[in-house]
Amino acid sequence: MKFISKSSYYENIRAWHEHALNTEYTTYESLNSKEKARLMSFNQLLHKFENKYLPILDAKLKELQTRVADPSDWMQDFNFDYVITFYLRENDPEYEEEDDNILMQIESMHQDYNDWGFGFTDNNYADRQCFSDEHHCYTYHQLYDHFDLDWLDFFRIGAIEFELKIDEQSDFLAVN
Image (cartoon, rainbow, N blue to C red):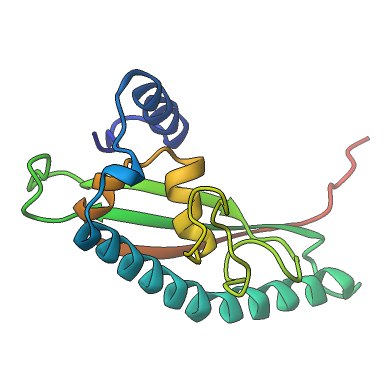
């Protein structure tokens, strides 16, 4: 399964959830040691990815908050979202030359948290009962726990893209 480019983000997420409910997923216990090592390597890649982008997100958030607090600035509010897109490998059976080839996307609003979520890689997001000896970063946890990605689907990812979306908003102008 992959994202359908003609469908909206929410239609694709709904399709993934329905797929998860109607498909037998690979259990973590059924993976061999090489597969688990590849997953942990990917988790480490995502850990570095989060550490790279969290300072950028935080700096941009502070900048926007400063602008909102400035009465001389036209901006009164903002939306601050990020999108992480996971693309299929070119050798994937579902890869098509004229398609976006998106396996999964995470759209999220960046919050001013001090110790939780994207980029707070010191936290272990692994379920301690299932992964007692592993440390999972937030994005890795999101993929398998929140977005229903099968363990074998992780091996289909060939590229990752980070996109920051900022909508600057002014105050309403009253019309009499």
